[in-house]
Length: 260
Image 1 (cartoon, one colour):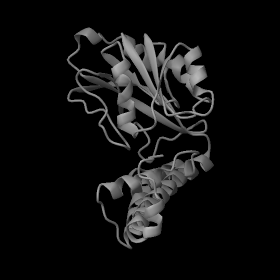
Image 2 (image 1 turned 135 degrees about the horizontal axis):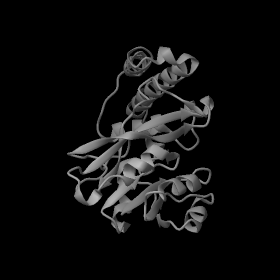
Image 3 (image 1 turned 180 degrees about the vertical axis):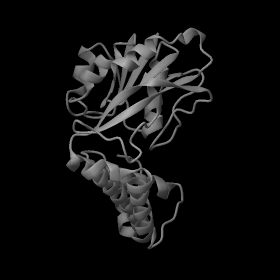
Image 4 (image 1 turned 120 degrees about the horizontal axis):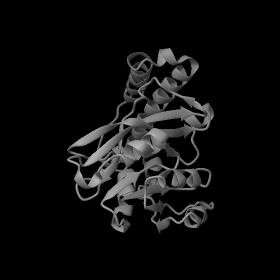
C-alpha cells in the first residue's frame, strides 16, 4: 500500500489531475497545503484527500510534513503539476514493496513548457526519487531543491510528466515563485558571500553549462530560452545576495521568516 503526498499553494488548476494520477497506485492521498486562497483545499477534500494546513517551511521540510499522517510505509511524492505516465503506473504496480532490497525508486521526469517536452539543457532524463520507504529515508530537510536521501535506490524504466511552465513568459516569472530571491535569502542565512563579479560569472557559467555542455543548442529557440532563463536566474540570485550584504535598508525590510 502506498500513500501519495502533494504539497500545494494555490494549485486549483492542477490538483484534481494530480490526485487522480496518484489514485491509480495509492490507497490514500495527503495534501499539505500552504494556506491556499483559491479552492485547492475544496477540490482535494472532495476527491477524498486528507488535507493538512501548514504554512510553508521550505521544500524538503514541507514535503516531510505529510509523513506523520501517512498510514503506509511507502510514500509516493508528486508536485501538483506532475502526473504519472501509464508506464509509471505499471512499473509501480509491478514492484513487490513488501519484499524489496531497495529503500526508494526513481523515475525519469519529462519537463514541459506548454505542451513541449524539453529534452536538452539537463531537463531530461532528470531522474527523481519519488517513491520511498518513510521508515528508511525521506527528503533532506532543506528549504530549496530538496531530494530524497536514499542509500539503495533503483531507477524505474518509466517517466512522470512535469508541466513545469505554461509558456515561455512563465519560465521567466512563474507566479508566486521568486526563485532567485528565495535562493539569495537562503544563501545569506548560511553566511555565503558574493562580490561584484559573482552575478556575472555565475550567470555566464549557467548559460554555458545549459547551452553548450547540456546541449541546449540542439533544442532550437526553447533550448536558447531555457539557457537564458537559467543565466538570468543565477545572475539575479547573486545580485540579490550582494544587495543583502551591502544595503542595510534592503536587509532591514526583508522578512527571513517568509520563504516564498
